[in-house]
Length: 81
Image (cartoon, rainbow, N blue to C red; front, side, top):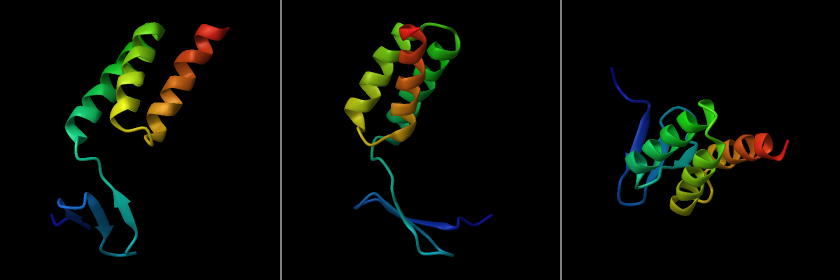
């Protein structure tokens, strides 16, 4: 199976072969993915303080990560109730 995305590692920009849209891919993709999975696991297991701490770490790595911001909102919302 062939990929529909061209990825330039030197610029961290991925380009769709069909629509030519461009996406920025983090250089620390594996680290960010692991942090996100850990934070989500903690949140889903009701450890909201732990989740917020890991989401903070994740946002230090990639502040523009919208999923991390949303996870932070979900964890913080429960603590605020």
